[in-house]
Amino acid sequence: MFYSEEETYSIRINAVKLLGALCCAKMSKPKAGAKGKKRGKGRSNSKDGAGGYAVVLPYLQQFAPPTAGCDWAQVSQYCGVLYSYGACAAYLEEQNDSFRNTLLSNRIFPAFASGNQQLMAHASWVIGQFSGAISKKATNSIYERLVGALRGVSVEYPLHSAAVGSLCELVEAEVFPPDWKPLLESLLMGLEEEH
Image 1 (tube, rainbow, N blue to C red):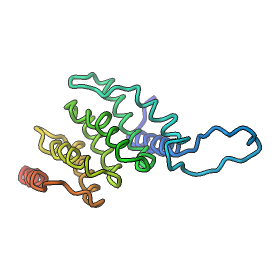
Image 2 (image 1 turned 120 degrees about the horizontal axis):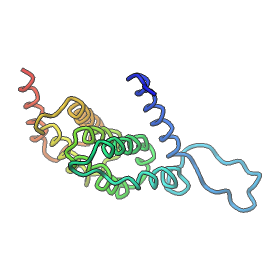
Image 3 (image 1 turned 135 degrees about the horizontal axis):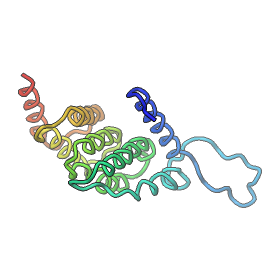
Image 4 (image 1 turned 135 degrees about the vertical axis):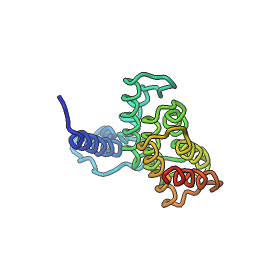
């Protein structure tokens, strides 16, 4: 079946909404003797019983991050995985820094090492979704990757747009780089190339 660009976008938005709801859903098993009791609605603010911890993240874990030279099927599949992490941002923001830092290091940052611009664009977008919960420890690594994406050879528009968008999200969340110079140099290079 062929979907128009607008339909494809709508399908992705709907999937993101559903994943976000699933991640935050309470999935605790009813305790013994509580058969007739209604389950409380709303988001779970811990790992225990949350759909993110019980269902979504374990499922995503089975997909290995692609490496340099990976085929299109792997790229496409992992782009879906990255979308899913972005959809789970509200749940992931409630977890501790160590949990998020491990996720970034093991599941998001490898997309930048792949050299594939589509994967790098998706990873950049995910970082923007986490902008309100970035730890000081992860800040340098994040800026290195986003600024590095801007400085790459023949950077295409989707990657450039995603990286700049995430950088804007970080600055607006007052997550500032340890050193402003590389970012400012990259932005100036972009302006010089435009004229």
